[in-house]
Image (cartoon, one colour):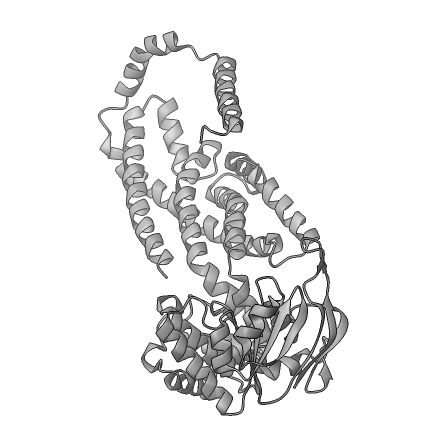
Length: 238
Length: 253
């Protein structure tokens, strides 16, 4: 469960306001939530704040009841996997090594110096196979297609089997067919019990794939409700 | 481009700079044309090459290459921490200005001055030249490495941070693979450059091919100097070809 209680990020002079400007919301276990809104509304920043990458000036974010502080950060991050816009992968490493990087937080710096244990390698290979990349695991990520890269990013986020998955525009730059494939994977994970928080720009996708939509504008929540009718709601609000 | 009146100003400024530089240098084209015959005489002294000194030339050149190998490696190892210190995505402002100051200081000292310093500290010979090359390389390699580090995709590092990776793990799995191809390419380029730089250090007695080269030219044994120059030409060309092929391979990584 993620709870944001009236959170403000630091003041941004180019906007003349904080990027996150008083956001309160609660995301329950097992939900699938779409974060929508125009560019610069604060969607990506909100996602980053949930993993402690955007400092909060006022208010607090709690994950499973624990407030995000430097001390609780390892716990908070162990509860969440994150999929970055564009993947956020290391292009020069193989797909398998990128997936293994998802385990780094569970290992000491010394033990990871010489590589990853066999069990982790097997798990990474299994994840890649499940996502249809069994034969590409030794391939450099820079040589993979956009859709394949996004699946590697999903596999990396799943390496620690987190209960919550955050994704920033997981299908940006992908064609229609690949978009459907990636979303189908995410939906299957949701069916398996994972809580999903997705930043999306496509309203039809929000309606089709998520139960709940939250619309942000200028760093505030202007809509929070079911996503059945989101296209209509959005056109009235934005 | 010429629609913007500001561009006229810059073109005018550029022309003024050229006229100013040319006038101040007092380049005399008439003396240049009459000096052609002296050039002919001077160059005539160099032919034909005296192949008797070929073994010495090979030996001196080998030393030059060895100096470049060790000097470049030394420079590369010392450059890495300075580059990390100077990179804006890894280091706080205070340390950064210190790193940049260090780099600029080293870059502004010519290699021949460094060679003079090391000759007076260590004594004549290739050790002094090797150290001079090592320190000289820092000024450039640190800058190259810094730029490679700064071009690393920030998202990919944050992504590792979110997995809970430590600083060392981020460096090993995030930064190193991304900077390695580019940095190795730059280091190879520096190696090539240092072979050429090392060949001049002999002038001040810091080892390498330059010592004999200058002695033969000044001692009117210029046909021997030609042999040295030819050997140098062949080796530098071969190394350039090899290393540019290798650099091409590296950028494809």
